[in-house]
Image (cartoon, rainbow, N blue to C red; front, side, top):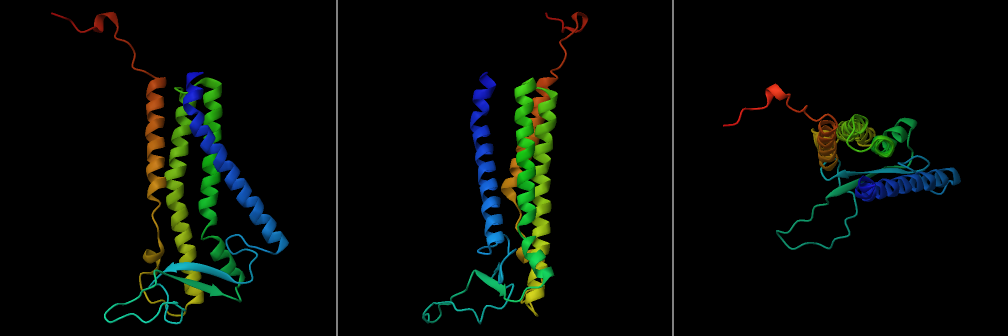
Length: 215
């Protein structure tokens, strides 16, 4: 079918994403079980988190830079906070700086597969596909935002647990990253879902007595 050929590139991207996610989870789980690696800090004896410069003191960090000529200054863009004796809470906080995004990604991939199956079963411009596309768009847009908020809160909690006096008073806002690309992609999917719904329910043709008169 012509529709199948048009969607083939998108199907390929979804399959590739599934392979990457599956391989990453499998390798990570094997590393944790084997004791030679970690996933989001889980399974590691020392857990670390990268934070923007200014969130935590960086004066004691080795910069590796030679003395700069006056008035040149050298400023680190990020600091790496590590703890060699993490508590259970710190393990969980570190893990939740990445897990929410992975969960949103897996959910989106599952919904994408469902949308493709609906296309194969009933065609592209149908109500069933419109519903799935709209649902996928909301998950990508809103889910990514919620994941970013959850990960920022977890990162803030981790920093507070390992640094006694953070430099900045706006720690949460320093750590947050808005997933602009994901939000835009979700909005595009929602809009496309509406296009598909409109195509599935085209306006009824004019009745004979409603045809505009011509002169």
